[in-house]
Amino acid sequence: MSAAVVIAVDGAAGSGKSTLSRGLATALRLPYVNTGLMYRALAAAAIRAGVTPDDEPGLLALIERLRFTVSDAEPRELLVEGFPPQALTTAEVESTVSAVARHPRVRAWMRDRQRAIGATGAVMEGRDIALVVFPDARVKLFLRAAANSRSLRRASERDTHDPAAIAEAMRARDERDARTNVLEPAPGSIVLDTDELGIRATLETALEIVHDAWPESDA
Image (cartoon, rainbow, N blue to C red; front, side, top):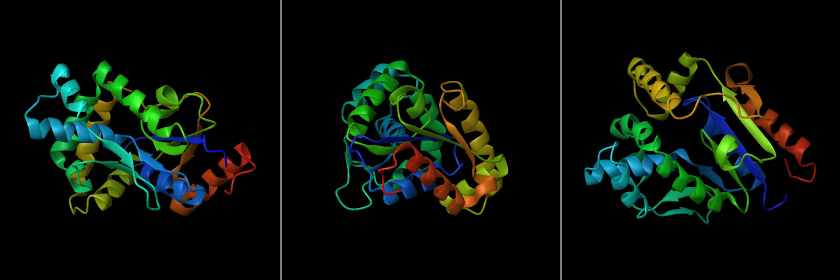
């Protein structure tokens, strides 16, 4: 497969983006880049430094200190220096990240950094990858799932026994996210319903789509 292959995966929180993206990256031997972690890292940094989500200049000062790399070991994934994974999935970060991500200059900085990370090829997961960051990506996938399925999946990811609270948090998150990015497939996207397909079939279908786009791939 060409080193410059970019596969964009979009969809609502809990729709299965991370599971699919990691599976695709492993099968295709491409780096997996969860761009949402980049915004979560900024939210976590703001909380740590006492910078409010409305303080765009303060956020821009923090963003310059963030360091993003891709691991060398397989599966190759995005790493955020100074932030262990569990620090990026707290309830406080969850409730802050949308407000942090709404600032145009913050998004512009992230866009440029994401393009640099994905320039040599990657499976890129994120809300605006197919629309803004890599609008010319050959494969654009958009995942759909019912709200109940999404909340149960997210509750499992967060290892919590209170799916009702997760459902409410996701509803609020959806509303906040919609103010920045409308949750609709980008032009040229192929929509996959993860409720109908399930995890394994979603991956198999996505790999078939990749193979159709790049017959020379190992998919």
